Length: 196
Image (cartoon, rainbow, N blue to C red; front, side, top):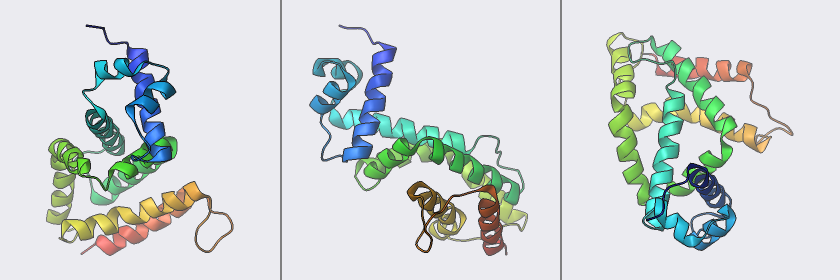
């Protein structure tokens, strides 16, 4: 049995994320990945059982990295406005530094594999995020809402601003660049909308 090589493993991961982000899942194959990563197809099977195993493991790793990054410096009992600001800034930083990883996750989001990934994320982060929201509700800083409504109001505006930034324009402008002033203005309106 051949041993694992960390450099090869990192290269395989990076190339798989890049290929899926750029070409989608339909255009992704183990052969294409091996060629892009400069390894033999047999090498891929040292690290992954098959194509689905590779996609599932990589998507779970990237999603967990993204969540870990977004929660850096946050704790469940912190004031709601402060915790949201920490999350927004962390999420923005991750998205801007890792556009390929975000595109990769977007390719996976609408597949049956995504349910397995979300299960792993929930198991790890539901206590932090759930505790944060529940404590804010108890303190009167957040109105009780169905999860989906809360998520849409709390995070969708941020993700749309990031999309405009990544595209370099919005619907009504020639040029758009996200900055701290716009981020803080939007967050202020979100916090106002979520307040009881």
